[in-house]
Structures are given as structure tokens and as C-alpha cells.
Length: 293
Ligand code: PMP
Image (spheres, protein in one colour):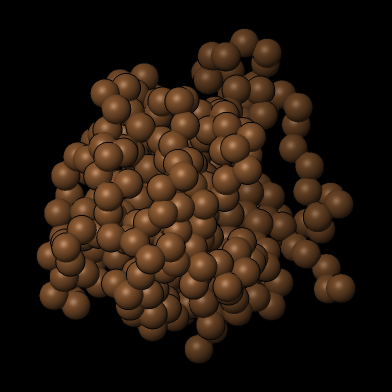
């Protein structure tokens, strides 16, 4: 197998040599941010949107990324070329960097930047037709005034605890609610429901990441002339929806066939979900930044 090259603080190193300090506050405290991006046929899908979200997350947590926007883009493109990657997944990580055991970020003089590119197949193709089994979980989404879910931070314990709950229920995905009982998102994906031809997704201020795939789906709904509403809804609305689907960089657009024991629609991916998936896959290698021409 070809060598996997990883960008680590300005250098490309092999996987075996890609090591960070145990004093890095990303490791000690989850202090940092990240992005998950896809490359399709040599095109970094919605590259600008992902980089904007990275720099916005950094600003929000007062983390100085030691690379300019253009340098980050070049580092990413270079890592993709070195790994001869046309289709795959890109993980950008910026941690607060090495400090001491105290949590004060002023003790971390320089943020660390890591770029990993990898092959990816999260769900088998059949799952996009059959749909997933999902459960709602009792663990609430972080409240925005504690740790805003709009920040794509390295602190994913909220999501991991939710994943543990859905694993215990032997489900494929979890649905998180906020403290008021409104649906927010999945463990690592945004959520949409469809009722009588109208597409609904929760507003992100309720406690969800502003997903880039979510944005792409909102754009596609507009293009297809589908009515879309960003408004709060509860699990009741999810149970009685005609279609439910999740969106995310890794998962793309994937239906739920059963939620908390309720069969959704016909019990497999519905026609609007499949249409949106098809349209989504038509744009992923066009809308973005081309690394390979
Ligand atoms: N919500 C959470 C909590 C996520 O981690 C992600 C990314 N995996 C998403 C939503 C989807 O965001 P995107 O479409 O930008 O990947």
C-alpha cells in the first residue's frame, strides 16, 4: 500500500511519524477546532465554506491559526497531491498546541496544524436505499451559551456520549434534542424531515452545527422548487414525517427508515430524499476548488 503522508506543522510526515505532544491542549482539553471535507473527482467540495467555518470557529475561541487562508488551502492541496487522492476525506485539525498541564491557553505559544487525507466509505451503498435505524437520546445537545454547537470544536464528548447511547440501542444514528425538547441534529449530521412535500430543518440556533451539506441541500431544494422551512420541530413531527434524512460530509444524504420504533414513510428512502441525493451527487465534483485539472 502506498505511504500515507500527513501534514504536521509545516512538514509532511508518514503516518508512523505523525506524533503530537502529550502536552498539546487539543489532547489534554479538547481545545481546538477541526473540519471534515470531501474531495470528489479532484474537487474539494465547498472548499471555501469549510475554510470559512474553520476560521470562524478559530475566531470564536480566540485561536490564532498560524497559516493564512491561502497557505491553509495550499497545504491542503499539497497533502492531497502527495497522497495522489482524487476521492476521499480531508481532516483539518488546529489544536491550541503544546502548553503546560494548566488549562490557560496563554501557556500555548503556537497552535498545531494537522491535515490528514484518507479513503472513506461510511455506509454501504445499499444503506442509502434502505435507510438507517435511528433513536432519540436522553443526552441533550450542548446549550449554545455553554459551548455553541456552531463551533466545530475538538470537544466532541457531547456527541460521543450520544453515540454511546445509540450504540446501546443498536441503532445507526442518534437524534439529539436541546434542553427544550426541540430536535437539533444527529450525532454527527444535520437532520431534515419532509411532510406533505415541504422540507423542514431545525434552525441552527437551537443547537446544531451549520452543516455545509445542510447548506448544499437547502440550495438544492431551492433549485428543485421544493418548499423549505427552517423552523423548530419535536420528535412527534419526526415520527409522523413522510421522509426523514440526515446530511453530513461523510454520510452525504441518507434516509432514516425507522426512528424510536416508528416506521418512517414506506420504511425505506423516500422519493424526495433520493432525488436530493442524486442532485447532491451531481454537484459535488463541480462546486468547490479543483486540486486536479
Ligand atoms: N453536525 C455535527 C455535530 C457534525 O459533526 C457534522 C459534521 N460531521 C455535521 C452536523 C454535518 O456538517 P457537514 O455537512 O458540514 O459535514
